[in-house]
Length: 197
Image (cartoon, rainbow, N blue to C red; front, top):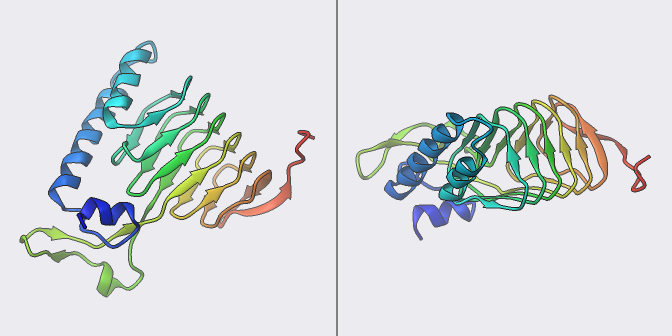
């Protein structure tokens, strides 16, 4: 199994792998280009996202600046909007549904590290490179969600369709559909009726 295959499978992998370094470097360079363009450069910006390998629906608008690790492991559905400073670390797949609204400073992070420092600390691998051990878990955000400003969503979380996550929340566990949830750690406060009341 390649290090990329291990990474995507949620197994411990070596992030200093040459293939992964090349993919990250390419994505980081494209993020920089995206962030240096104006809002009027919509086609140019979309081209940068496609070059990263993002799977984009129609009418996706990402305000920028944005910061992605790989880009190619992210899918975003139709009519989704993200405000300033969207960060997605996609060492595992990130799926964002249709009609999702994201406020400023939303952070979506799939990477995880071992809990024991003996397993987590930096070490020299067989190629003589200083590295660490990490793994990830995928993140899914369902259709019609609103993720308010400065929310952090951690690896392994699914946010059900139609849910609202309150500003400043840290989402460490999955949230059921049609829920209003807030806090650190984020917890469900109440259900949102399907009729919108």
